Length: 244
Image (cartoon, rainbow, N blue to C red; front, side, top):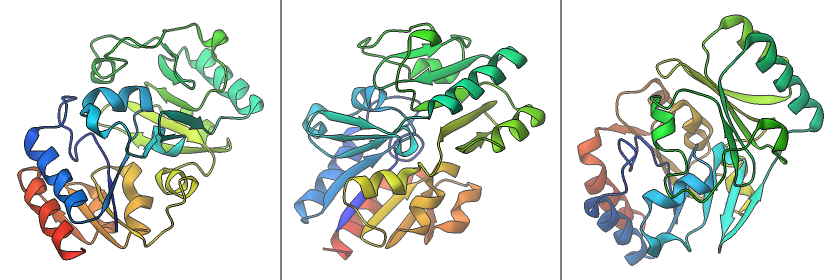
């Protein structure tokens, strides 16, 4: 069986690297013969710093499905040129702050005090470039909760995830989500166990063989069970044994 783990709020907390307790639980999965896959809203660039290097050969999905990572090779799904132009028009019209990712580099104009900045390229392997210099744009975060802007975005061929508590809208190319990313890795629905905690894990839960929501979140309605953060390591071990 394949075990798919979201990172932030699921097995990674406050942007810090995985704890030894979490790593021991993940290692238990492999001991029981399961494959561990990571699937995050972060681009691959920002996933690697919170993972032990011994996990760098694991398969990964990043950017809510926009990126896949296999043996050091990053592949991505990009917005069309027309969609990029329309996003730029919205950004300029409303004078929005943003974080926009390409395959590795990015363009960030938000406040450095925002939590998302704390997790942005911590190893300093990328370059913050002007938006006009980015190519193959694969993910956009707009720092706004404006309803009028949301209505504009809903008319575009994109996938939206709203994070009202963080004051941002997460945007991916149309039909790009974590399950689509898994499928590009050859991982089909109903063949994996999923752990997640956020709106962007809904598809992951709905197509899982079994799913676990970490914490008290609305997306729990789509999961098979809901657990608290402190119970995560033990539940991983239990399910690894159960499905072996």
